[in-house]
Length: 315
Image (cartoon, rainbow, N blue to C red; front, side, top):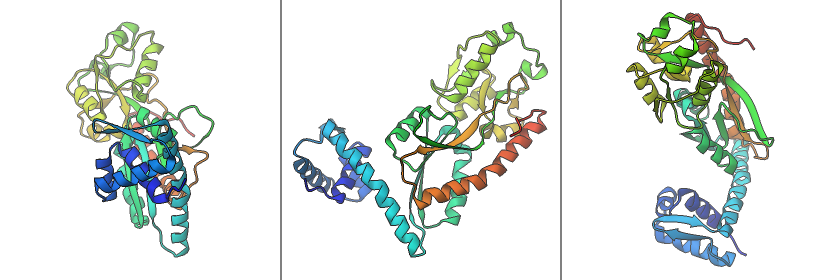
């Protein structure tokens, strides 16, 4: 076979974009040019690498093998590029971060401060549900992954980098704001607003109800933290949510944290990557930046809890 790095780059971009048209836009090339390159790559491989169904591109088994090879080649090339740039005294390269949805309340700010320190590094941040993030982690598509419930796998490098207190929120006039003495009947009859299946806050809600012998029967299932907050503000029910997501509403008096047993829930942020992945200088720089940037955020969350008469476990 006579595969070229250029062909592998094109094939990876097309496969990840899902269509030749979208890949052409990303690569600033024409669709016919990409089609010719893909045809030459298939001819070199000696078998079909993909098929087009409707407007979607589907890989064959051979195509998935080529895609994996293209991804394997990308990492050492990116590292080499950044190492050579570093020898010239120039910081550059690309850094890709994927994080679960709650991280949208602080990660853009952290990336902004990182960009000011490292203006030559091109950044991308993807915010997504946990299930989609785990899929990207399995495929090794990004430099770092930020989440609160790491998958139970041995071949992962993980580092606890911050706290993510989960709190129970209510409208200011909810009856539970007056009492912590909760009984089974009260808990079982209370309406809860939850996120989609697989979310961490939904799991914590179910676990908490289980401590009272009650079962989670969601009254409303919503797809974002913003929708959850609006439903609770409207008096539809209670919800478990990250303190990161509700600081503004709490300060404005539009929502309240309930001082109920077992809350705040002790949840932590983890920075993850496959143990086998080669760390680029840009990725190492971001980890160092996160280690410096997260403690002040943590201190602010602990202070907010203490102002409400709640505590956070000491390290």
